[in-house]
Amino acid sequence: MRGGIVALIFALGLTTVALPVMGAPGERTGSTIYIVQWGDTLFSIANRFGTTVEALMAANGLTSSLIYVGQRLTIPSSTSIVTQERSTGYLIRYGDTLYSIARRFGVAVEALMRDNGLYNPHFIYVGQKLTIPDSTTISEGYVLSSAPSVVSEASILEYGVGLSAWGEEGYEQARLAREAGFTWVRQGFPWREMEVGKGIFDWGVADRVVEALEGFSIIAVVDSPPFWARTEGPANSPPDNYRDFGDFLYALASRYRGRIKAYQIWGEPNLASQWGRPKAAEYVALLRVAYLNIKAADPEALVISAGLAPTESGLPVAIPDDLFLRQIYQAGGRRYFDLLGVNAPGFKAPPEVSPEQVAKGPLWGEDRALCFRRVEDLRRIMVENGDEAKKVAITEFGWSTDEHRWHAVTEEEQVDYLVRAYRWAREKWSPWAKMMVAPPLADPGWTESDEGYFLTYPDGSLRPAYEALKAMQK
Image (tube, rainbow, N blue to C red; front, side, top):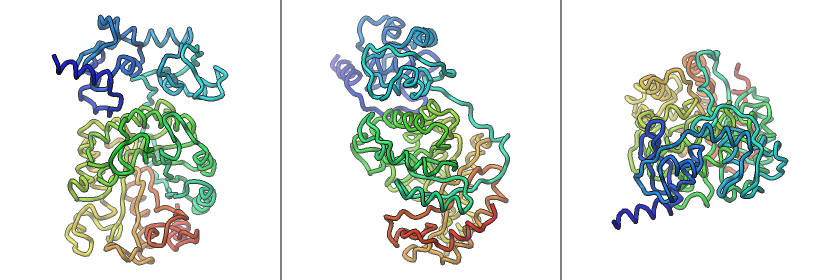
C-alpha cells in the first residue's frame, strides 16, 4: 500500500522528467494505450496526445484526476476534438502557451497571432477564445513532413564554411564566406543566449545573425542549454526536461521558418565533456523531441544529427563514434534525422589515406578513427542499417597547425590537405554526401592558441587556407 502511495505522489508531483526512448515505459504501445510514467499528469498526457482531460477520464472510466505510475490508459481519438475546436474556436486552459496551442493544431505561432490580433505571444489568459487558422495534417500532435528524397537530388557536393560570430561580427564573416563562394554556413545558435527564462526570449542577436546570413543555406547548431534548464553535469550537458528543449526549438524554428535551412542537434554527445555520461539512447530521446518540434514549426527544415567525435576511447571519457552511431540506430534514431552529421578531422594523415592504413601507421596515430576518411566507416554503418537513401552532412573537418598538438601539420600542408579533401569528397562521396563545411572563420575573442584549424586569425586577417579555398573551383 505504501509503495502505491509513493508511486502516486511521484506521478502527480514530479514535473522534470526526460522523454523516454521508443518502446520504453511511457511511450504509446500500439495506437491507443499509454503507460503512465513518473511526472505524468492527466493534463500533460492529454496535451501530448492532442486530446482533453475530460476525454481521457471518460475513455478510462476515471472519476478523478488521480493516476499512478504503470497505469495503462486508453488514448481516445483526438480527431473529432481537434476538428471541433478548430471550427468553434479554442478556449485557453491553464498551462497553455501560444506555442503549445500552435503545435496542437499544426499551425505557425505567427498565424495564430495574426488571426487573433495578438501583438505578444506571451500575453494570453485562461478562458480566452482563439480562432484557429487552417493547417496541414496532424501526426503525433505535430506536423510532420516526409523525409527528403535523396534519390531525386543531384549528386553534387555543396560547399560550406563554419562561422564563429554571435553578433555584429556576423556581417563581416558573411562577407568573407560569400566572397569565397560558399553557399552553406554553419553557425552556433546557443540556446542560453536566446531563452533567458522559460518562455522568455531575447531574439535581438539571433535576428541580426540571421539577417547577416540572408542568401546562405544556414545550418544552426543548437546546444548550450540555459542554466535554468539544467541542474548538473558539464555546461553543455542536456536539459533536465527534454520538453523544454522542444518548446525552445519550436519557437526558434517558427521565428525563422524558411530562413534557417537546417538544424544540427548538439555537438559530440559521445564525449563526457559534452553530455556527462554519454548514452546513445538518451541522445535519441532528445533528438526525437527536437525533430518533432522543428518539423511542427517548419516542415521544410532539415534536421542533422550531432557530429560525433572520432575516437576509440571508452567510458567514462567517451564512447567510440562508430559504436555510438550503432547504438543510435539500435535505439530507433534513424527516423529522427534527415542528414547524418559527421565530423571528419584529418589529424596527421593526408586526406586520401584510408582508415586501414592509419591503423597500421605509428606516425598517424594507429587508430582508424584518426583520419578524414573515417567518414566512410560511418557511412557503412548507415548502409548496414538500411539507411543508405539518406545523405551525410560533413559539418566539421580540417587539419590543425597548432605546434602543441601531436597531429599538427605545417601551414603549407594545411592548405594542400583542405583542397585535396574537397576534391576527394567531390569525386568519391558525392552520391551520398550533401555538403561539406570547411573550418570556421575565427571568433575575434579567440587567441593565437585557439586558431590552429581556422581560416582567419582572430584579428580578422586571412590565412593562406582561406585564400586557397576561395580560389578552389566549386
